[in-house]
Each structure stands twice: as structure tokens, then as C-alpha cells.
Image 1 (tube, rainbow, N blue to C red):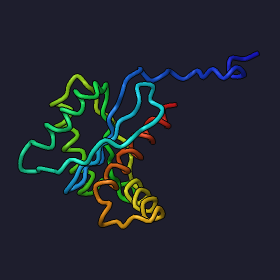
Image 2 (cartoon, helix red, strand yellow):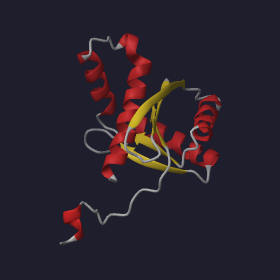
Image 3 (cartoon, helix red, strand yellow):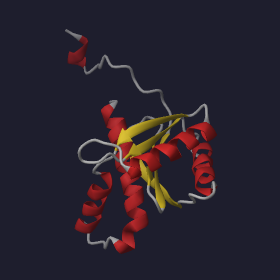
Image 4 (cartoon, rainbow, N blue to C red):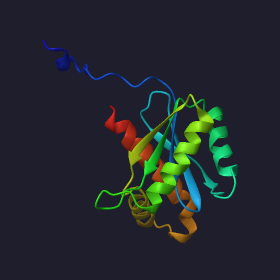
Length: 154
């Protein structure tokens, strides 16, 4: 029997370890983490952006240490026609500064075009208002970013 018949996949496995997913917004950063086997992403917290300082960057670096993360997945919000707008430039700039701060921990990028909208729709469907759920939406978007990245590599 070929190996596939036994459920063995020929793709290289992800190295074992936790990864953080981050959704960089102009006001808040949603943070998620996955289990060491890279199966399930769960929400962690929402960090207030400090564009004029480094408190947000330092908090994410603390979370990398706290969770002993081996990688960080940053959502890259491309526009519907697949171009990088202002939001993508903001996310990329933050991700690049984060990469310098947390090296040798790797930073990866994940297309996140619909994650915030999907998170808002899911929360709305569960009966929560968008206004009361803003921090939760950021965390849910970070979960969607990280889960999408993990699923694409499974």
C-alpha cells in the first residue's frame, strides 16, 4: 500500500512549538496563540497600539517570551484587488520592527483580507454588539489569521 493510504502525509511537518498570531490595527492589536502541536489557535488578549512609542511592541515581545513562541504570524490586510494599502503598510512596518525585537524568533505573514469581517459577523450572529466586542473582535481576527496559517501548512 502507498504511504498515503495509511494517512501519512509527505509534506514536512511544522516544528513543534507555540506560535502567536497578531492582527495589527490602527488602535488595537489582537493576539492569539496556538498549542505546541499547531492544531488550534485561541485568543490571548488585545493590546492597545502605541504608534508614537514602543509599549505595544514590548508587550507583544513579552507575550512571545511568556508563551515561549517559536514564531509569530502577522496578518497582512491586502485590499480586495490584492494590493497593499495603508493598513498593510502599517502591519508590515509593525511586523518588521517586531522581527528585529524578537529575533531569532521568526515572523511570518498571512493574508487576512476577511478575518475582521468574519470575526464581526460571527460575534454579531452570537448576539454581541460590535461596539461592546471591539477587543474581542481583534482577538478573534488574530485567531483566524493564525488558524489560517496553521491550516495552510497542515
